[in-house]
Amino acid sequence: MKTAVIYYSYGGNCTLVADILKTELNADIFRIETLDNKRRRGLFLMLWGGGQVFKGIKPPLKPLSVDISAYDLIILGTPVWAGSPTPAIASFLEKNSITGKKIALFCCHGGGMGKALDKLKALLSGNTVIGEIDFISPAKTDSAGVKQKLSEWVKTLI
Image (cartoon, rainbow, N blue to C red; front, side):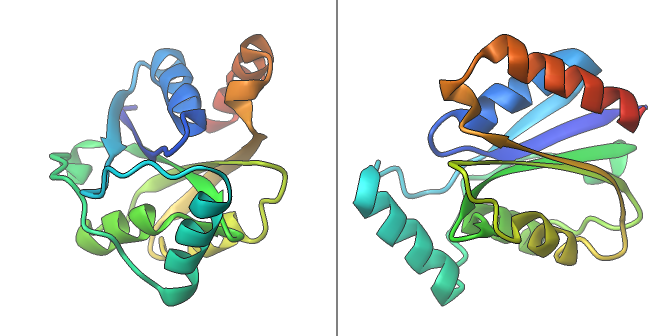
């Protein structure tokens, strides 16, 4: 099964998960990046990111060349902002038609997932979601534990 891991990461948590998935599944990996390179932290990040979510802003993205039709399984990953998938993921999905695919989802959050995965599934109608998983700040935890959790999850996807 040809697999693509497509993700957005702001603070490195989703990058860690995506890299492990790439290795576990021998997958191709694609990182979504916004044109806005300004780094925000703490309260400024929360206000900026939450504001984008609440206002429905879909930021412009750097070009990403991925042929969705070439993959049997698409794994999408996102941080959680204001209980939602990031606006960058919404931008990507608006610009890239994904239908008729097996989809697996992961999200990373600081302790509050909200309805992020449900909202992400709503953006992916016309596909079959075969798995979902979330992580609390995986870059700040034991990476061996993250790898073990992902290894078990991957078995359910194959």
